[in-house]
Length: 251
Figure 1 (spheres, helix red, strand yellow):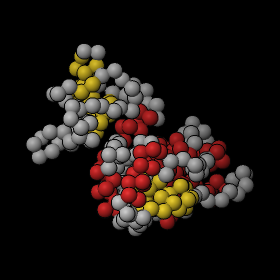
Figure 2 (tube, helix red, strand yellow):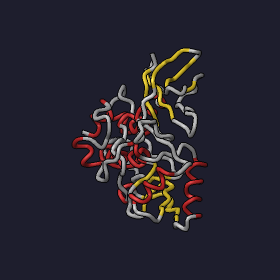
Figure 3 (cartoon, rainbow, N blue to C red):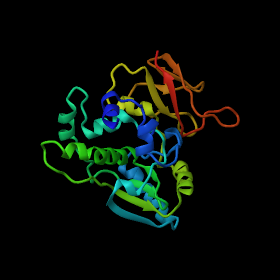
């Protein structure tokens, strides 16, 4: 079942269906409602801000992925397959022998004191899926390898609800949608772009650099032409909420 999902990229999220019941056992918060830290410096600044508030933080190093659980429900199957090195054009046995565990020297992964992930779901899922595939992998001709940990994991001494609130309020965090990964994975001919609204006059932050801006009618203008209308979360007055992402079609 898991191998079929990696080959077909179905379901779209590893937290759906029968696979989801095996891999994801936590909360079901949409990705757009989660904070996302786009760089190591943003994440370290958030950790520092917790220390400044008197909230204890602890670098736990690399840990077993089974000791924490997911908060967000969008864990993109094809992104995890790409991380593993899974190539649907190759045989299952070739893929099983080629899968690789997550590196342990990347940006920190954040979790709450009650064991929920705040940021780093796809590397967590990478380790989870790798370990699920190990029995089939080790039954082949490549010899036995051990289970993967993931990290470095920083535990912040707050429960997930309080940590989510501070994460979403943090100036160091943005928002991400599944379309970000569509573009980051190199999908050609994408008809969508994802932009981030800034404070005051809306500014944009896309996953691919483009020459354009959002005007005061929330239209995306590029080379003097309106390419699409921004849609984003709205406040009580119907105005787009700064710091949220909008998805709009490129004509």
